[in-house]
Amino acid sequence: MATDAQMQQVAELEVEMMSDMYRRMTNACQAKCIATAFKESELTKGEAVCLDRCVAKYLDVHEKLGKRLTNMSQGDEAALQKIAQQ
Image 1: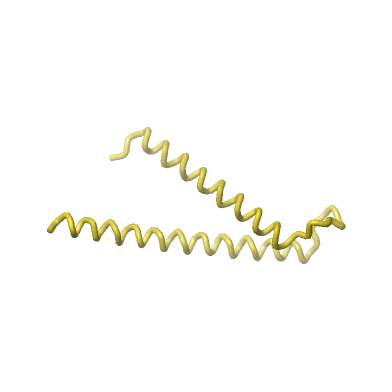
Image 2: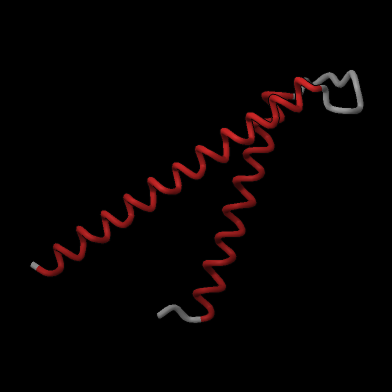
């Protein structure tokens, strides 16, 4: 079983990964949806819609990728157990 120190490391890694994902998403969606020359202090409707769609797509891809990686990891683990039993 995992020790408290290991659980702490896992929690810290998860926070770091989520922070990195948020930073990347923010940078990508801002670069795509918001012009570098600001004309107004508030987001335009087009910018807001673009940001909403960009964030939704980014999170959807992140979720699908996470599921795929989990499935691959479980498959690798099962293969290793099968090899160990031989």
